[in-house]
Structures are given as C-alpha cells and as structure tokens.
Image 1 (tube, rainbow, N blue to C red):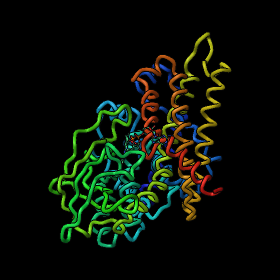
Image 2: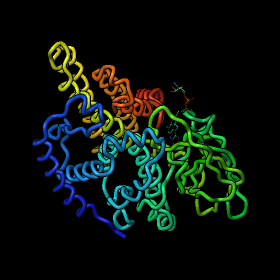
Image 3: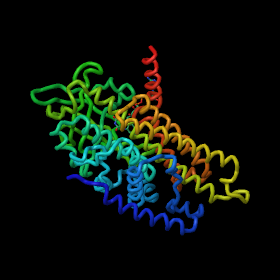
Image 4: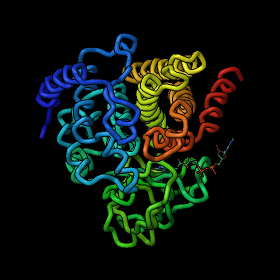
Amino acid sequence: MIRSLATPLRAGLRSSAAATAAAAAAPRRSAVAAMAGASRQMSFYNHDVAGLTDDQLELKEAVSNFVAAELSPERAAQIDRDNKSPEGIWQKLGDMGLLGITVPEEDGGLGKGYLDHTIVMEELSRASGSVGLSYGAHSNLCVNQLRRHGTKAQKEKYLPDLIAGRKVGSLAMSEPGAGSDVVSMTTKAVKKGDHYVLNGGKMWITNAPIASTFIVYAKTGEGSKGITAFILEKGMKGFSQLPKLDKVGMRGSDTCEIHFDNVEVPEENILGKLNKGAAVLMSGLDLERLVLSGGPLGLMQAAFDYATEYAHDRKQFGQRIGEFQLMQGKIADMYTRLGASRAYVYAVGRACDAGKVSRRDCAGAILYSSDACVSVTSEAMQTCGGNGYTNDYPVARFWRDSRLYMVGAGTQEIRRMLIGRMFNEELA
Ligand SMILES: Cc1cc2nc3c(=O)[nH]c(=O)nc-3n(C[C@H](O)[C@H](O)[C@H](O)COP(=O)(O)OP(=O)(O)OC[C@H]3O[C@@H](n4cnc5c(N)ncnc54)[C@H](O)[C@@H]3O)c2cc1C
C-alpha cells in the first residue's frame, strides 16, 4: 500500500494556523502555570535561517501538528515517569507514513531524503527525546538498512509491517565487551546446512524489549572481513530479550540486552552479502549519525524555547530575569549554539541527499550538535534556577535525554577519532 503525507499534511497545516491564532489571542502564562505543567506556546525556531524547501516546511509542520496532538508536554513527562515506550504511538507514526520515510514509494514508503528524515527526528525529539530516539532506531537503523541492503523477498516480507508500525525494529551490533571496538564482537554465526546457528549476545539495544525484527551483526569469519548482518525475528527458538535497562534519560525508549542460544537463522536472512557486514555496518553508521543529529537539535529547541519563555516570565529584583545582561548572554549563547548546530546538520543532510555522504561530516554533525545539546540543556536548567532542578519542570529531562547522544551511535571520543583519522589518512 502506498501512502502519502499529502492529506494529513494539508489537514495539519489548517489546524496549525488555527493554533497559532489561538496562541496569539491567549494571555501569556505565568511561571506558576508552567510549574503546573501547562503547555508551552512559543517556538523560536528560525525558519528564515533554516532554509527549508516548501515540501520540507510542510513535512515539519505536519509532524509538529502530530506531536501537538499525540505528545503534549504533559504526555512526554508521563512517558518519562512511566519509564516505558508509549503504547499506540507506532501505529500512529505508521499512519503518518513516517516509519518508512526513506523507503521508495513503490516499496510502501514516502520516498523522501535524509534531510527530511532528520527534520522528522528533530520535531519528534522536540516533543519527546525518547520517542525521537526510538523512532530513529526503528526508521533509520532498521528500516533504512533493510531498504539499502535487503533483497526483494526480504523487503516484501519485513517492510510492510515495519512501515505500518505493526512491528517494531532494532539494530544490534554492540556487545557487553564490544562497544567502541565493535569489530571485536564475539557473537558467532556458524553455517549448518541451509541455515546459520547464532550464539552470543548484544547489549544496550534500543527498542529491543518491544521489537519483533532485529538486524544483528555476527562473526562468520576473522576480523572485520568476517562480519555478516542477519535478520532475526522475535520468537525464533533460542532468542531471548532480557529485562529492560534502568537508564538515566530516554526513559520512554526501551533498551535491553538480547541473547542467542543456538538460534537457527535461515541463509536467506543474510542482509547484504556473507562477510560483508562491516561495510553494511559502517556505511549505515554514517547515515545513522546524520539522522540521529536531529535528536540533539529537537532537544535543544525544546530547552531553548522553555528557558527563554521562563526567563521572560520570572521576575527577581523587580525585573524579568531575561533582562539581566548575564541572562541575555546565556540566551544568546544557547540560541547561537542551536543555530550553528542546525546549519551544520542540515548542510550535511543536503550533501547526503546529493549522494555525497562524508564520514567525517556525518560524525562532525552529531559530535557538534551533541556537545551543544548538553551545554544548551544545562544552561536551560540554570535559567530555571531551583525549578530547573526538579522533575516538575521539563528542562531536567531534556538534559538527561541529551546525555545519551554523547554515547549512543558511537561516543564523542570515537567521532573525534574518526574525523582526526581521516585527516591523517588524507595527509599521509
Ligand atoms: C541508551 C543507549 C542506546 C543504545 N542503542 C544501541 C542500539 O540500538 N544498537 C547498538 O548496537 N548499540 C546501542 N548502544 C550502544 C552504544 O553504541 C555504545 O554504548 C557505544 O558505542 C559505546 O560503547 P561502550 O558503552 O562499550 O563504551 P566503551 O567502548 O567501553 O567506552 C568507554 C569510554 O572509553 C572511550 N573510548 C573507547 N575507545 C576509545 C578510543 N580508541 N579512544 C578514545 N576513547 C575511547 C569511549 O569514548 C568512552 O568514553 C546504545 C547505548 C545506549 C547507552
């Protein structure tokens, strides 16, 4: 079934105009109202500088309307408190067509590009960092890898359910003993007749507690030339999902360890080619780094919007705190860090869409935006004073969520190492 965003987009734009008019007419909230968890009303996203096309603006607006309806600030806070992926969200994301955003229309997707994907990631993360992260793992790490490397039969078998949100996807490469040095993984796949027998385990796998379709990397030979990607399904004999991890942030994005005890995987479930998994993995990581950069952008926007409004509601010394020069400096620094991050991420997204995928710039986009995100969310907490240090306000959650991007999808140190190494190779 080929779905189009056109109808929900048009409907979405209408309701967005109405919401803007209502917001303009509404009185400004006080800090007390904010304390009670009332919805934020302003976003300082700078459309003039972002430079999106009309289509991209329409997409952003549609997702913005979706999150206004489905992921209100109150719901996002509840998701965090529940420490659980919200039920029903997958089907709704599927109905919007967002789960197969980069899949061609003939395969049931929206046929859009990587910058579009990043914009959706950003907009979802602005509402809920957790939902954004889980969405990224499903739509990029799993679905986009199937789109890029799957056979016709694999795409026909797995994509419809994943795109519709009937099933959730994961990608499993990290292991308890193989994180940054992922090539040292010890999960083994041994050929036996027309199938492979997998033994081992994977750690920190996003969506694993709720997923049904897993892309799993395993050793089929020696070193980096002996890695193969497989498609596994929940329910295969010997496959188990361990209890959910208790994380500091991203608490609505379920994560767990998975184990393989003589799991028999048919040969036709090899994704890509035998012993070519490292290429599947590394090229996928470049695009993952770009698309996941939307996460820090969304979290920064949420933190900046909240803190800036707060600074213009809250009074001390008979004055709005946003009018103190030190606080103006804070707002200016947050604003420019966000703007610089977005400019870089969008530029890398446009390059990827033009077929110029640069490993060093995909790493750079997430490196820069993640550092900026931790700084901006921390300054947003500071702007909210004592309130910012409580869980009654969302800024502490933005900060907790932001910390994931320093480690997930490869650490900041490894991103720096990659960029430096590429210059070393170029100038050798
Ligand atoms: C919430 C969450 C979700 C995740 N989701 C997934 C997922 O869906 N799928 C998946 O496969 N993985 C996932 N991961 C795993 C993630 O990719 C790894 O945690 C990450 O690659 C780091 O590995 P590690 O935790 O083993 O840290 P380590 O590799 O042990 O690193 C520890 C520290 O040492 C530093 N370090 C290591 N090597 C070097 C070096 N050569 N030079 C300088 N510093 C170095 C690191 O930068 C880090 O600061 C997730 C992790 C988290 C926390």
